[in-house]
Length: 378
Image (tube, rainbow, N blue to C red; front, side, top):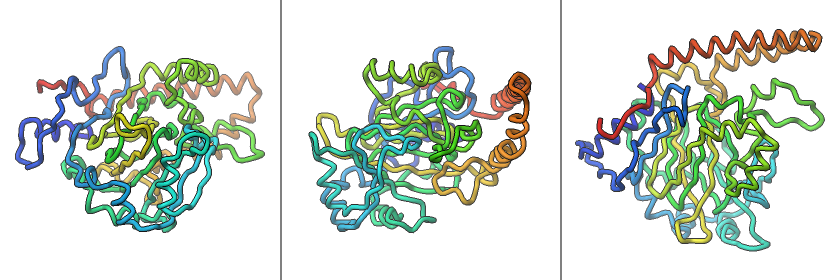
């Protein structure tokens, strides 16, 4: 039935004072917890929608995880951080450096202002990677964090990721292959989301190696956007410049969904929804940290399609990998061997065939996926 259905059913149980023993949601929601699909928003995307759960009991971490507590639990361990002079991070442009610093230095650096201010971001890694970002760091804190098992619906947890960012840091636009729950523990987090239908408008591509020329195959090999985190800009002038450089992104902007998450909020992020984030301090504070976790999980019906070598929850599903490999090695070279006019014709004929496949997939998805058209009265 999909992750969105699980979110909805669990939320309804909490509102009605269900038997789970967990406290009911405290804030009154002015809209359905699931996004509506209508002519002014997402028009074609059939399937799970992002869903915001507010004031969820995610453990004692919300109260406990102060600077002093983290120093006590973790010690003065050295961790690998993304460090940047500016707040807008981009994976494609690689406008940041990896720096290993003691935790005590990070807390000191994170609160700096003025000319000395830099932006810092820490991400714990999957257990398959035994590096400075070892998951052992999160294990020392894991007892303080919990997520309602009902939300996983029997799904297999792929990974749990701890994120710590200095206020103002903006993470690049990307998508993940696994469904996941983003949980805000400290501070706030601004999130922009775009539906999977906008994949052709958001400039997804693999970073270009030095000295190599651009090829269309790069757009099949990445999960991060060339836009970086520039869509997080708040001024009309900055966004106007983005539209000049990336005109298709202006079309996608019509479908943007925005949340500002508070401590204790949990956001359901369906696989393949594009998202970028901004770390915000607590309301009323000028600086500080934003601490959050992601719980990536794989639904039972999707397990056979996932790559067992996937560490970051962003490797394409196995059939897609095979298809892209065939395109890169067989289809693309053959198309490139054609004269320009003929190449355009056969590319357009291929596009027409793929668009027909999209229409068929949409019909199948409409029959089997969650429609997202629930209302609060249900």
